[in-house]
Picture 1 (cartoon, one colour):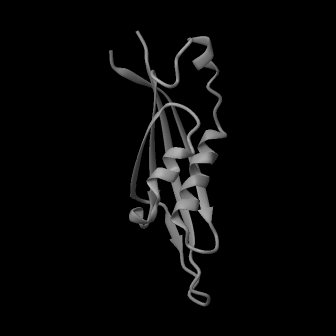
Picture 2 (tube, helix red, strand yellow):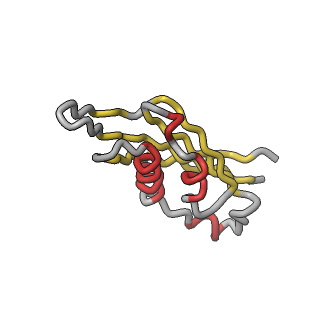
Length: 114
């Protein structure tokens, strides 16, 4: 049986000082998570450990600077996959060499449904 996407949540996060791409990514994921409530998981009696798949896509200007394992560990439920792509936005601060990093996150939840 193929898992079907039932939720897509979007979020943004930033690190205004320090240029930390992982911090911005984590904040984007948390922003997306705080926009949803998965009441249907209990209603449908879905086992989130075996039947819920969470696909996270993060967009930042420097994808290789995101700690994927930290992002994966921040998700409370499901079988999590994380992909980091070029996106987001860096806002330069040439006077202080302190860019603001903005990350985008898409969190999709797929369920094994009949």
